[in-house]
Structure formats: structure tokens, C-alpha cells
Length: 241
Image 1 (spheres, helix red, strand yellow):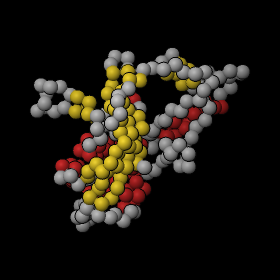
Image 2 (cartoon, helix red, strand yellow):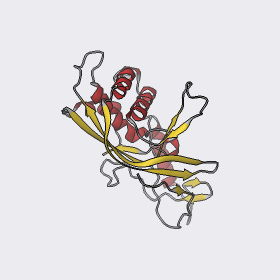
Image 3 (cartoon, one colour):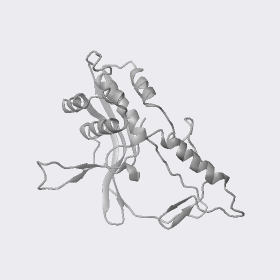
């Protein structure tokens, strides 16, 4: 582990290009987003265009939109839930299946429970399996249509993590923190390699995906919804690598 660093708000350089990643989890939003981009691009404003986006007091012009599967950054893409499920079924899994997740922006887990109420919540700064995967199950349950929800079974994932079916095999993580307006947010960035250990129970009509296939499905979902706390603010930017 390396020492933690505090990152404060930094000045923006005029005419430098900055990338903003936007994820849409509901397909109904994409036509609206596309129309907003198209309408903005076709508006006539004479010699100058109004800012496309304003963050705080900083204004930004739109230079380019990247949405394909082949962008060299590796941070663009699109997929349906049906294809996400089929993708999880494809690999033939060995006795131990490696899975590496990259946590590219500040990531943390807001932990607390009724049993520990006297101590208050705390930011958990390690991507332990029982933090990562049950949290992704909750996102799946929020996003998936009714006929897809049962493909990922919360009790199976929670028990698999509790039984050390998923373990951390290696990691390259460092503490990280950001200074927001009202507080310093603690977390971490880096990569973590998990081992998904077998054997697998046979699939059934009630459980058409093994628990390891469900785990792989959730890791792919993480690319679109993020992991942990305050993902809507850009925290927990995650992808399988």
C-alpha cells in the first residue's frame, strides 16, 4: 500500500480537452440524450456557441462524442441485459477462475449497521468480495426487468462470499481521497484480482446461472453502474480487465 494523498480542486487549463464519462442505465434515456446532442450540434449561434456544459463556474464546449465499442480508452460501450447474460454463460470455467477489476476513480463503501450504530458509519477502503458483489446484486435488482431479476440470486452470492468462494488473489491498490466542499472523502483506487473458486452446482430451471456465472455477470454490470458509494457523482468507476 502506498501513502494516501489528498487531491483538492485543481485549475482547468483553457483549450485543453477534458473527458466526461456519462453512463445511461435505462435504454429509454438514450434517444433523449442523442436528441439533445443532435439539437445542440445543429443550432446556429453565429460566430460563437454557448457552453455545452457548466460545472461550477467552468464552461465547456462540446468537441467530440465517443460511444463505440472500439474506442482506445476502453471506457465506452453498450450492451443489452440479454447479451450481458449470454456473455456470462460463454467462458468455460476452470477450477479457479481469475477476475480482475480496475477501480479507476475514488471508490469506497459506506458501511454501518444496526449492531454498530453506536460507532456510526465508516468508509471501507478495501474492495472485499462481500462489499463488492452483494452491492452489485442490489443494482441488478433495481435495473433488471422482472423476468431477469431472478437470474442473479442474492442469497447465493452472499453465501458464496461468506464461504470464501470469492477470495482476493492479488491487488495493486492505494489509499486515495478527494476534498469536496464540505468534507474529505476517503477511498482507494487501483486493481484487485479475485479468484472465483469452484466447483459449481448444476444449473436448474430456478437457477439457470451458476453462482460463478452470476459473479461474472455482475462484474460486467459494474462497467456501467460502478461500484460502491456515490457512483452517480463519478465515484466507483470500475471495469473488468
